Image (cartoon, rainbow, N blue to C red; front, side):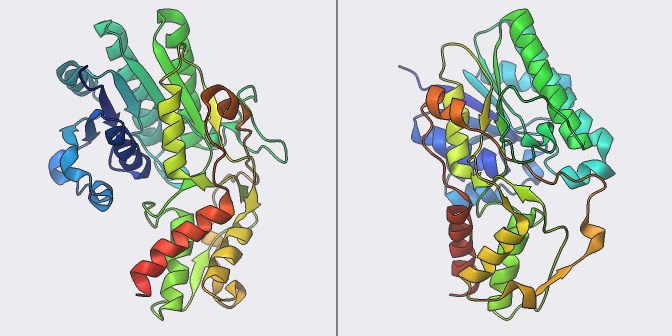
Length: 323
């Protein structure tokens, strides 16, 4: 049998790199895209040692013809859309870019699939941000959306487009509503990696203080390599469906900070400065998900929780800065 072909739109990020590694391990032929292949470093693929095993193509997800040409040329069996703006904070400064890259980008892919009328399965990256503030009640697949940022509005729109095309045209299209998931591949503009890297630098004597925003927010943090496995599992069902991917445990950012400093035998209160300018215009106080459907229907393994995530991220930065 010929190897399955997967197209990962947005392969340069954390999830794209881990998904490519996972699919290659299953014998897939993998093609990945960025906006401009010639200008992209593909550092995450290099870090995982798979850069030379992946074919690369330039796709501007906002450009219908660009999306059409890539899909027509590669003829994938599975398409994973991980592209678009990834920062909630940035979406307040660039709301149009958030809507265009996430909502319009998803619509372009759906339209190409509809018009080509060829058998292909489509995974779209959703977000827990769509739920807004969950409080102490873990969100599941039936929890109403209450987006609080342009990013979340765009992700909500994309999810409803997936449902509309699935019901209207019979497409195999699904959304993974992923809660926060981290790894050493996270760039430092994400607060989790900023914290871990900052602590390691403080321990190494390269930094004296770490500036952070609101430490009272609570999130459900998981391990990214496990979350891409859930993406693949969603694409193997007989019928497409949407799933919440989470650990079911929420902790405050203050807890995350304290545990990270504890790993390096430091007291966080001696080094952390609160910077009010880092606060967002509209912040989600608490966010936690219920992964029961994914555990039961997909056979997804019980995910690593926040303590394991912090330990693995700290170990990676300790190796980088302290050896």
